[in-house]
Amino acid sequence: EAGVVQSPRYKIIEKKQPVAFWCNPISGHNTLYWYRQNLGQGPELLIRYENEEAVDDSQLPKDRFSAERLKGVDSTLKIQPAELGDSAVYLCASSLPRPGLGHNEQFFGPGTRLTVL
Amino acid sequence: LAKTTQPISMDSYEGQEVNITCSHNNIATNDYITWYQQFPSQGPRFIIQGYKTKVTNEVASLFIPADRKSSTLSLPRVSLSDTAVYYCLVGEGGTASKLTFGTGTRLQVTL
Image (cartoon, rainbow over all chains, first blue to last red; front, side, top):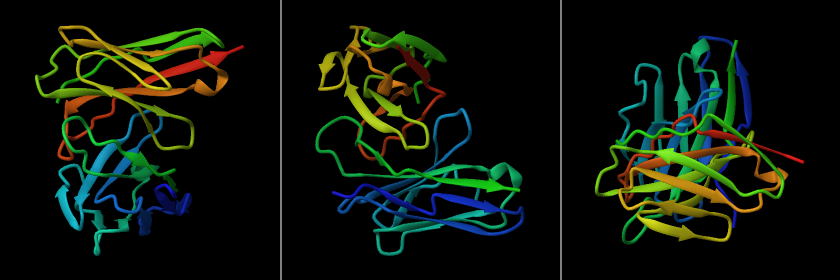
């Protein structure tokens, strides 16, 4: 079974330019997450989707970041305009509802490494 | 969300057992303890999850004392390929739970 797919793997842009990241979750996973990971730090949640609904976007910098998951499957995260501080790895993860108790195991993609010059 | 504290780094020789302890003094009644592993240039990968006592799977064991204020991830007979960052996370279960990653423990395994 294919894992979480992300593209591109690497992106280099100049500041003030727009950039978009794409994620295709594992088939059947209705929950999708976008994380940002700065060098030497753990991932930080940006937004979580349940199907096509964004149920937690409290950590998303809405002045420049936007995301969509129109058909409840793949998702796009956009930054416009990018700033130097946006350089990081952007990770996408997906999960299935877990019956009973405990966290739903999240399956992560390889991430997109963004460099803003 | 319960805050976790774990060592920044650990070193081990190949073949040894490695125990990484995580402190979570303000863990709540409904909180679960989850560990993830992350290799360079990859996303984190789920290792193990528990609520109390001991949980074991094919790659690790998780020991949780009765007061649940700490937990220990045990990796038996580590190999060079276990060199990675290990994250301890605490929070309520279910889809709505928000996993908060700290800085993790960087484990370096050498010959």
